[in-house]
Image (cartoon, rainbow, N blue to C red; front, side):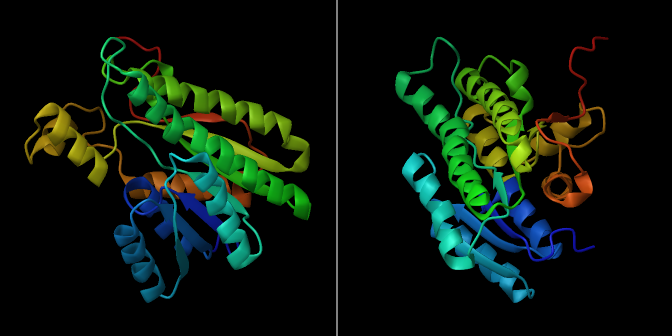
Length: 258
């Protein structure tokens, strides 16, 4: 459909999982895409896949736990393409830790990746949009844990709740600059990272996806490509004037009880 024709899109944390799916969807819709990440191997492989299919893509190496590198990723894309029209903050750390078990070091890691990196990437991207006096769009990938989350994701839930508040604050601050900023609180999703997490922290076997899906209302986990289509819509002009929205992309209904 060409929803993002000629747009320059940066997907932070875009070399795998949900971020990679968003990168693929954005290229399919006509965007020039940059993906950032700490490890060059998956990033370069994704870029090769996208360019091999006729798309335009680049990889930016950045450790998003460092705020300066989060800002530098934006600067590198601007240097290469002259602008950033759309930003997606999809990097996430889901290392487990309860209120009692979380160390200050683990807490800081969650804040750095799940909240601080989006903050300073947004700062750099919005500054570019304002300097060029052009509209822009940003989508933050949040989590339904922003509403509370399970006990073993205490720091993660705190950081994602902060991201929801940041989204509303920034959207309000820049609505007259025509910079639209929204947050997508995704539920349990089938990704490479989730597979590793389930096996490392919960002793899950290779069939954990099937077991989990059987207990869910829709009979399946969230799928990265479905999330990606929704994100592309929010990035595009087709989503109209919506800004400051924190959308629950999940199959469980917040506040409802059986």
